[in-house]
Structures are given as structure tokens and as C-alpha cells.
Image (cartoon, rainbow, N blue to C red; front, side):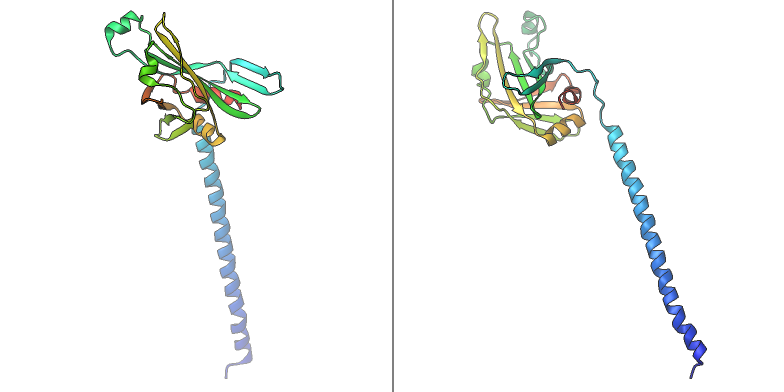
Length: 219
């Protein structure tokens, strides 16, 4: 039989080993969580610093309350898409004007974000070619990364044609959800596609930073 003091030492050593094991496990987990915290924090700071910076210049066409008390803020419109005349003779006849120009203004009405659009086409036959902007038809913004934001037009418009100037103008608007506004503001615009009632067409971007600069002005 083992002496009593030997058995005592054996029974005392086991809880000490367990205590050391759990202590080391706790310290390891603590160190791991600390490393993860600072790594995640650094990652978030890097993402934040990588976001494009707006120009900081805000100019408004409307910044007021309407007669029913709604707060309206709309930035000055900017050209954001275009199509040139493909024929050099026609381009010269129109004094190097673009065949198609699209303008937009970001706006905020009582904390609801939206975009107002205006499209100018150098043709008195635009309706035969494009048809109209129909409510529910989409405008698609393709960003530099390839991500796309699709927004439905909120109103139908068949266009106003000036026969003497061979010129047609369309206008409409779209509501802008929060997640879409954050994505549009996060990187440059690369391409835009519009789904008209008679066709869909892709356009060259004239102002890649249009949302980066405009959206902070109306939030």
C-alpha cells in the first residue's frame, strides 16, 4: 500500500494541472479575440479610407419647403451619360453636339432619396426609335467593379419634341433605396443601360463621380 502522504500529493497535483490547462486555454482565447478585434478594426479603417472622396462642393437648384411643408433639397443637374453622332458629316452639322445627352439630379424629399432624370436627343423622330419612358422600366447603373444597381422609373413620359430644332426631351424620376445609394456612392460609375419601351441601349458615362459627389449633398 502506498503511504498516505504519497496519495495526498497525487490527488493534489491533478487539480493543479487542470487549473493550468484551463488558464492557458483562457489566455489563448483572450489573445485570439484581441488579435481579431484589432485586425477587424484595421480592416474596417482600410475599407473606409479606400472609399472615394466627394468633391465637397454642393450647389442646389432647390433647397426649400414646398407649400405643404415638405423639405425639398435637389442638387444642380449634371450630365452623366452621352452618345455621339456616328457620322462625321452629321456631327459637323450639329456643331459637334452629342446625339444623346442624359442629365441627373439627386434629391431628398422629407428624407426620401430620389433621382430626377432629363434626356435630350437630337432627333425629331426619337419616339419612333426609342418609344417612351414607361413607369417600371429600368435604368441600370454598372459600377467600376462590375456591380449593378437597377432602379425602376417612377413615371411614364412620351417625350416633348421641338420640330424646328429637331430635338426631343424626356424626363422621369426614380426612388433611391438606402442600400442602392450606399453602393452608388462607393465607387465610380462605368456604364449605364436604359430600357425604353421600344429598345434598350447602353451609354457612355460622361461623369463617373456623379453619385460620389451628389449624394452626400442630399443625405
